[in-house]
Image (cartoon, rainbow, N blue to C red; front, side, top):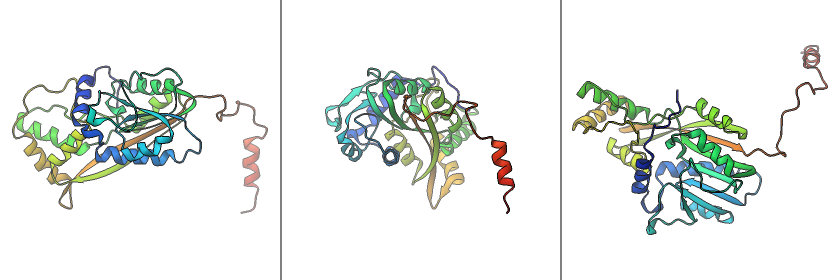
Length: 292
């Protein structure tokens, strides 16, 4: 079970990794896939949006489609000149969104929330920055993400050194994420998950994709000792033994999607308790009396 912690991640190191691996403004394969899924899901909402905030890495094609919005991107690090995207960039922390209350009517966040120390605060900040009846839609990594890599690294290190250190961050499960979304005060909250299975020719190729996500380990209590020279060799042997599919290594990405609306007086609300005019017992008895 995922638990909140004030010091799970080294946020300075997280920003360093994201700045280092976000090359020329191009998101990784997984970021592109989840961004396209978010954009497709947004098309289900039949209402116009005027101002939007994009958090995380987004494909240029989607930002071009969003050109009708007065939008900005929130980055954790200052972009270099070659990285400048199609929309204005604001450097800030997702736990403290640097905008006034009720600035946006749409906030989209792509695979960055799981790297926050206080996910509840991230969600509350998003709600604060939304106008009444504004829409929030986000993806984040769920608890089953990279479970294969986590297991083989722990097993390999324990075999070689007699002890093991966590090298893959813990992620929230769907129930925890749904609870945090509801606790943050969004109206009509929805949480669901999809499992994406990606195959790689080698462990090195998988690690490169994780680095392209800015996802190298940023655990504050990670081991500071030198990695044993045989650790990744043994981990890859275990990976091929247990998780090979058609001569490829399988990697699981558990993608949780969260959505909710900033509270507004014009939203649907449950009827007041006791206001019903028909008894449920009468309805059930009426249905039972019908011939089958």
